[in-house]
Length: 197
Picture 1: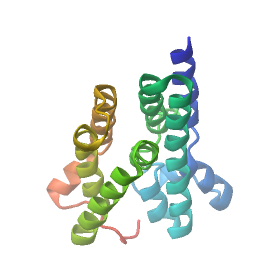
Picture 2: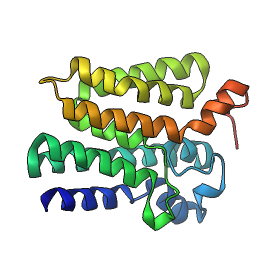
Picture 3: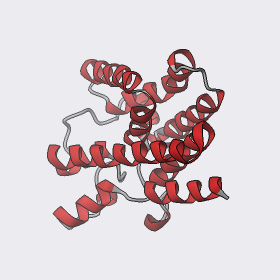
C-alpha cells in the first residue's frame, strides 16, 4: 500500500513540467514545439534563454530531490529508490502532457543531490569538462547517465544494491531518451551549446 502510494505521488510530482509551465506562463509558448521539442532544461535554455533555462533546471532538480527525501522518510532505502525512479519516469513520460516530457537529467541530478551532494558535484564537474571541451550538452548528459550507477556502486556508502539497480534503470532511461542526440552526435549534426534554434 505504502509503496503504491509513493509510486503514484512521485510519478505525479514528476509530471510537474517546469519548462512547459514556464514557457506557457512567461512566453505563451509550448516548449515542445521548438528546438529539440523536449521539455527539459537544455531546450528551455536554447529556446527561452538563460533565465528560464536556469529556472527550469532548478524546478526539475527540486522534483527529484523532494521525491527522494520523502521516499526515504516514508520507508527507508527501498521506498526511496522507488520514489526516485518514479519521479524520473513522471518527468520523462508525464501523463498530463501526453507522455512528452524531458530526458530526466536535471531530475536525476536532484535525486543525486538528495543521495550524495558530493557525487553530484563530481558529476557536475564531469559534465562541465565535457561541455567545455566539446560544447555538446547531450554528450555530457549521456556520459553522466552511464557513470551514475558506477559512481553509486563505488562511492555511495553503505553500499546499496537497491540504489545501484535504480540508478542503472535511470541511466538506461536517460540514454534511451537521448537516442536521437546520439545519432546526431555520430553524424556530426548535433547542436552545440550556444547555437540558436
